Length: 258
Ligand code: 5HY
Image (cartoon, rainbow, N blue to C red):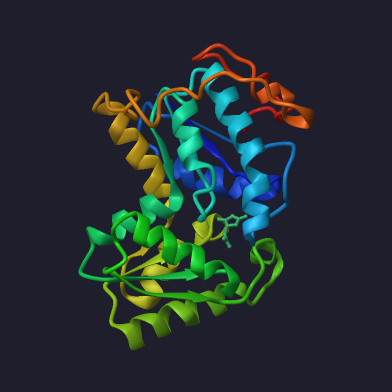
C-alpha cells in the first residue's frame, strides 16, 4: 500500500518531520511518501494562507494519484482543501485535524486542542463542529508560537508541554490533540509528561487511511464527491480545469517524493 502525505505549505524541513512521524505510524507493507508543493505559503497561519495553499495541495493529490497512491493525508491542522481532494482522489483522503479529533474521542469523554497561534483557534472550533465532536472538545488553546518557530525556538517544547499540562489541570480532559503538523514529533514525550494521551494527527491520519484501504473503503463517488466536472480555467490555474472526468490536471513542479 502507498500513502501520500501532503504538507500543504512549502517548507521542506517540516515535510521531513511530518514524513518521519508518518513512517513511524505506518504498518508493515505500507510505503509513505511525504511531499509538499512547490507553490504556496511557507506556513499556514491564516485563512488567506489556507486558501492559497489549496492549489498546490490539489496538484500534489493529482500527482500522487498519477503515481499510484492508494490514499492521501492532508497534513495541516486546518484540513485545507479536504473536500476538493476527496473529489479528485480515487482513494480515501484524511485530514490530520479530523483524524486527531476523532481518535481523541476514542480515548475518553473529552479532549483539548493545543495549537500555534490564537488566530487559528476559530478554525479548530469550526472543524470540531463540522466533525460532530464539538461537545467532546473542551478547549482550544494557543501557545503563540509561529509554525516555523516550532523548529527553531528552543523554548517551544517546554512552552507546549506547560500548556498541555495546564489544559489537563484546569479542564480535566482525558486527551490532548496537537494542533499543528509541526508538533508531530512531540506526542510521545508529551504523553509521558502530562499523563494523558497526546494525539499526533499525522500518525492518526496515516493509520486511518491504512485501515480504510485495508477494508477496501474509499470516498463515495455517486454525488457530492464525484470527480469535478471538466471546465476551462483561466490564468495561472489554467492547467487545473480542462480535463475529462477522472483525468488529472498537469503536474506542477512537485519536488521528488521523499
Ligand atoms: C499546520 N499550519 O499544521 C498548520 C497549523 C496551524 O503550516 N501546518 C501549518 O497553526 O494552523
